[in-house]
Amino acid sequence: MLLGLVNACLYSSLLPLWEGFDEAFHYGYVETLWQTHRLPILGRTLLPADVWRSFVLAPVSPIVHRWFAQTIAFSDWFSLPRLNKEQRRNDLDGLRPQPLSSVPNYEAHQAPLAYLVLGPVDWSISGAPIRVRVLVLRLVGALLSIILLFLGASALGRSLELPEPFLHAAMFTIFCSQMLYATIAHVANDWLAVGIAALYVASLVRLVREPDRKSVFSAALLLSIGLLTKAYFLAFVPPAAIAVACVWRRISWRTVVAGAVFVVAIAGPWYLRNLALYGNIGGTHEEFDGIGFRQVLAAGRRINWASTTAFLARGSLWTGNASFTTFSRLTLDIVLALLFLAIIFWALERRAIRPSERIVFITIVFFSLAVAYASCATFAHNKGDSPGAGPWYTQVLLAPVVMLAYLGMCRSKCFGVPLATATMVVWGWVLIAGWAVKLFPMYAAGDTAPMRFYQVWNWYMHAAGDHMNDLSLLALAPAPLLYAGLIFSIILTIVVAATIIRGLNRNALHVRKARGA
Image (cartoon, rainbow, N blue to C red; front, top):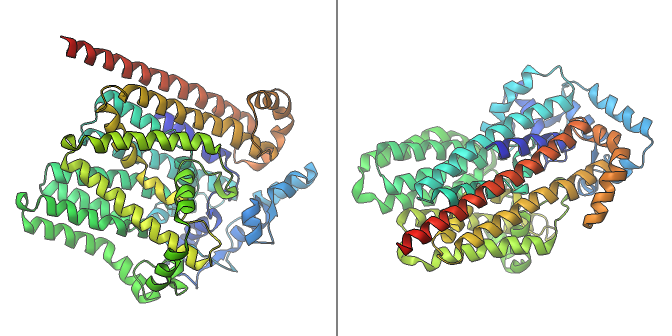
């Protein structure tokens, strides 16, 4: 948990203003809630004026600049004289909440729960500069997400009876995911969705293992919270029905009906609102703009699925925020290969697979189908100018996939420990290199090109000090504090990895001795 909390704080502080995916419009949702005391409506709700003004003042990625010509790209910002940069920063700090602008908020369709949690926090600090407000909301969301994910993933691993050393390795792997932090450490609703998803999958496992009133209502409550957080939780409804079908003879039908009624009563009004306002349940952009099932099917026949799947798979491991920079393709392919090999080990041990594991796999399959559908809808909506759905969607599958992978490792007598060790080393390296080689040089000096080890060393020895002021102006925390966090994160990652790997090898030695005896 400490590893997750440290990296979440560092990511929230390093990420420049509005460099999170669609963050300005998600934050606009939060501010609109307490300014108007009404839920936003897609097509009608406008972005607050201070948010739009800050969006024009703060530098943004080249991709975002292409969408909004009024903004300034990072490359142009870095070339400005120092006084101009400081003036922009001072203008940002002078902004306070203002009435609505004339710019529509395209995130107004989102389910409200995560924003309702952040709204009172934002209102309580409304007198602070917008950078401070955004940083506080990032930290609140990211830290709560880490706690929820820790509880959900550990509960899932224990419910699947994953041995303790492999459970520790799995938890380490989860908290080494750069894309996890890119997803939860900006103002949006993903921070709540990721943590609730892990708890929900764990509740389905408990439902299959111990079907009773408590497990039914636990799953119903978490599903309701999820549905009020993200519309993609609709993809988690069929696995719940399948889990109930698996234990139908061991549970009262009255309990099942009561659980279903509970979900409908809690989450139903929001989706009825979508139906009344937009004419569809999900309330998505694509459906709002007339992209229906027929257009999605037509897009599915035109998509290059090999390319889209590769984009989503690699992007689920590493995506450079709204700049969409990439990591080493070879390294990410190694990560994917190790995960795929571990899942194969799990699938080959068919006699050892329990119903609780099958429900986890079924949940992964259903959500993957939903992501494929979203990719088709995005492709149709953007007329082919998009490789697929957002890679941040798939972070809700991080805990389930990693837990199944480590189950496969622990059941492999010969390759389990070496495979777990290799997986931890590679994931730890991706986290450390993501910080030191990619993100810090990128936001301190605009250096996004791949660097070799000696180049990285020279950059930190000679160039990093020259860019301290730029990093302090661009990020949401002072550069010295960020570099201290970087050093602490690297040391903590190495220490935790070494400790867990030693535990894996000790456990393997005990197992071999037991078999010999």
